[in-house]
Length: 341
Image 1 (cartoon, rainbow, N blue to C red):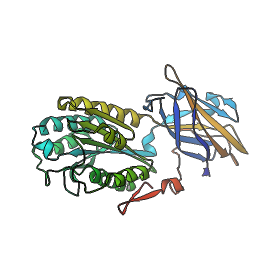
Image 2: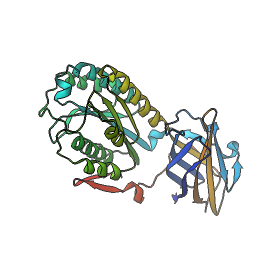
Image 3: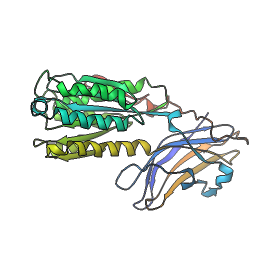
Image 4: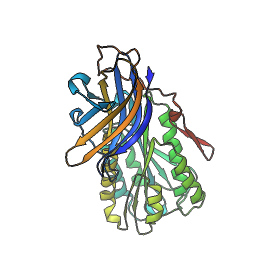
């Protein structure tokens, strides 16, 4: 496999689309595959883009789609996504009569998200550890059955260890990602809480450092519903999105909104494959997305076509270099390795 060296992973046209390059695979006879995600000017994922809405330029010249045989492959051949739902089950939740509606909201969320990825559910209270409710699994039925345990959940400590729980959940999610067979692994942490950190087991500064250091392949969303929530605090945790409300009756709507965002984010990843007409030399490539009513955007990279030949099949499974340094980035959070290889 010939390595594709990235020149620019992001190029934005006006206030339209942004294409974030994750990795590229280039191999003989003349296959080029690029894995990336597309978001709009509000950083919301853009799903359902078709192959004919992308244009390929090699060295500034448009490549005919008939010559390139461009296609979008099923991303599951190279990538996998996981979501961990972290539920606040402290005394303020379990003793307020909210356990039932909260379990219903979590169940609907998990059923929706588990259609495209594996989902796990963990609970936290004031204790140091987070508590597994449902292990990583796909299929809404399996997840929903376990979530029923939230209805009768009894906290080990009625306080709220929000800061520590988020750090522990990042470690659990990252560790599970390490064991995936696919070379490209992505995780999403969704945190629900009805308030703020009261246990003070972990300083807020430590939590912020953990969020700053976590691998770029992990996204964090927050659902905050309750009279005690601190919007500024929760928005700082939910780096990719936060839905907040002081009204407990809006808990299901909040979960639905985050489920929509996670679903859009998951479906905004594309594995784009084509056959290059180049047969030798170094080349600059630009892939442009042009989506009606959403705008345009593009990404660029550079590759070497030495030894390229005809008879390329764009449906060939690409080979990504998981030993590249960016897939071995590891950050230590309280001594726990947060890494995606």
